[in-house]
Structures are given as structure tokens and as C-alpha cells.
Image 1: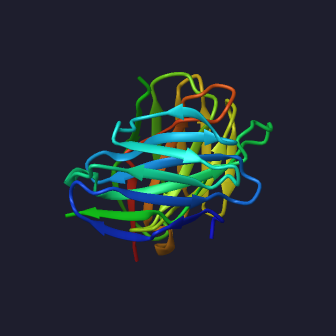
Image 2: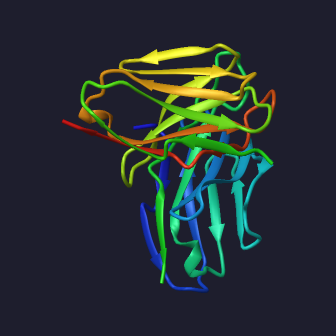
Length: 116
Length: 113
């Protein structure tokens, strides 16, 4: 158990709908990352937040958005869903600052999204 | 654009044998990660390598980093069935701070008795 909690674990929804994925980082971790894993694209970085602020952005579609709240949990919102959005969405967390010893990035169990 | 290439992508080996997985990356980075993933499961952190010449070992796995060659290796010693999984290397694109990890395609390892 990495300590990163994601809900829901599985989600089936229809095209055109909107879903929200939730993530609670490990205790003490300030950085939250979102990744998408699919068979054709592999593991892709979507976005990173550090202590409530967006820090880095990857291949995140305009239909997707995220935020990190004051209690450090994060939500990934996916809207106007398409069949191709079906994937495993991971949240990860880390301390966030370089401390010289190397910050491990811990991944949650993922949220399986199926768009039908 | 940073690219991360792993090889081989598929590896079938017998128990007791040794083998190496290679991870090449295309631009400067000061941080390289190795992860293990079982089917349908999360990514388990194995190693974080920070500097040139870094070597870390855990059980039958040993990882090394050559930043000049932009190459990391994951060496498996005397493989056992429990090591069967997909192994990913990932490179951090932000220098001096953590940020966007670019992952390789993964090496699917199957250890047969």
C-alpha cells in the first residue's frame, strides 16, 4: 500500500458524460501528479500540482482539468468523454521538493475508466 | 522532446538466469526512476537514481545510471518466478525539481521455471 488513495476504483460511463476522479496523497506529500495509462499511448503525464498550485502540465486535453484543494487532495475532471478516454488513471504523490536523497513518487491503485 | 526507450520490450527467461534491461533517454535529466507493475495493478517504486555512476541494489535487482551515456540498466540476478512483471524506467524532465515523468514503453518480463 503506497498510501495514495484513489476513488472510484472502477467507473463505467457513456460518451459525452463528465466524471470526477479523486485522489488523496500520502500524508505529508505536497505534490500530486496525474497520469493516464492506455494500451496505445502507454503511461502519459497529465498534470502536476504542488501545494495547491499547478506546477507542470503534460499531455492533458482541454476537456480535462484538475485542481488541488487546501487539504491537498486533488480531483481530475474529465468531460465530454470519448471512447478513446477509456484508460487507467493514476494519481501519484511525492514530498515535492528536492531534498538531496531523491524523492520517490508513489502511485495509487488507479481508477479504471471505461467509456461506452 | 525527451524520449525514453527501453529494450527489450519482452523478455522471457528461465529461473536462475541473469539478464539486463536497458533504458536510453534522449536529453539531459538528473533523475531516473525504475518501477514495477503487475497486471492491472499500481506502479511500485523500485529505485530512484540521481547522479552519474549511481548504483542501487535491492534483492535480485540492481540499477545503475550513466548520465553521460544517458543510459540506465536494470540487472536481474538469478531470476525467480516472482519477478515476472512489467518494468518501467522513467526520466524526470525538470532539472533541479520534480515534475513531468516520461516513461518508457515498459519491459514485460516472464520468468519460467
